Length: 465
Ligand code: ADP
Image (cartoon, rainbow, N blue to C red):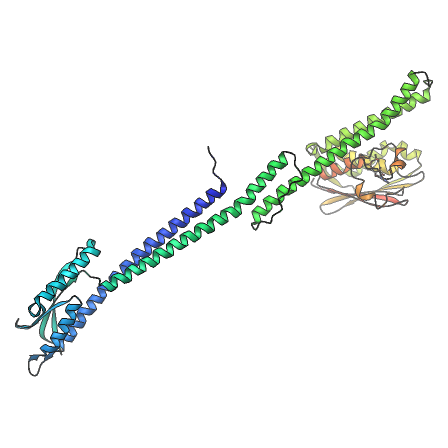
């Protein structure tokens, strides 16, 4: 299905909503105003007839029994120009003043004008001239009556009509201007929303094509869009970091393998070509180098295993003190050979964790402590139970780690003072494995160390895994 752009969809929706709203407001207000105006006109008409009736009533002189025909004439003529044709008569039916009688032509003209005008402007109301009788009262006495004919149910004068027309024009103008204004505003808004999305999509495309340096730099004023932009930028950052790490890792592995492989290769070559006697010592040296390579491959394997989908599937309730004791028993020979003073202190905290992985982490830390502590040194393991976690501390008074090296020791292949450690045979992977295991358990690890004084590795593991 053909997809429409977000901008056109948003613009269209906004335009539709605005159009419907404006149209509804216009139609409703038009209807409402027209209705109200008609009411007003009808009211005005009633008022007018009442005025005529009341002023006519006053023209009778009860004492003389005479009508003031001059005034009646004036009132009648004014009323005629306003569209009211009157006929005043006494109680016995005798005519006092009759507009039709007075000026037949004018009356017919007025009636024809009004009918024509109303038929033209308001054909739907089907109006016509109607007559109504009103009694003329004076001090509660009926002194006569007036017949008033006018165009009903109501009629609008030219002025009234012009007023209504002007009102409608204003309404239509306001509607059109606000419609146009909202369309422009809607278009700007749609553009503002869609632009960063389009750009972010393009950036994501670039990232998937391997261009990790591209970033979205413009500011957006929408919180959600800002979050989207930041996530895509972060994604690019982390992919770039991953790419760098991969490059470094490959270089490091190549470097680590090259040295022992070159040594073995040159030694074997020399022996094959008869330059060297294949003595036991030389063969042993080759064997050691091969062992080093094997250990490196094994370490890499465990690191890959730990880092792969957080391999901590078998979580059980484990006793840390028991684990530390088992590991230290396995390392007893090394501890004994170096005449190290080894103590384990603390409670018997149980935590929910993967036993094999935690054992591996503790083994790596203890092996390091033994490896980097000279003869007659001290190693202490302290276990402290906290409210929600358990702290495991492995402390030694060995060679220590300089402040400059401390931030990097958990990185793969990082070895503090590399030459110093060549002898110890480590490839700098042990601590990377430890950190991965602890992280996978939602724990934390940190180091406190001083060069030539000793190191303290502190692990904090949550009790519930
Ligand atoms: P390695 O196999 O080299 O021991 P690790 O990842 O276990 O690799 O350790 C990284 C580096 O951290 C080591 O090369 C060493 O310089 C330093 N290190 C680790 N543990 C200790 C310790 N207990 N005392 C002093 N240095 C240590």
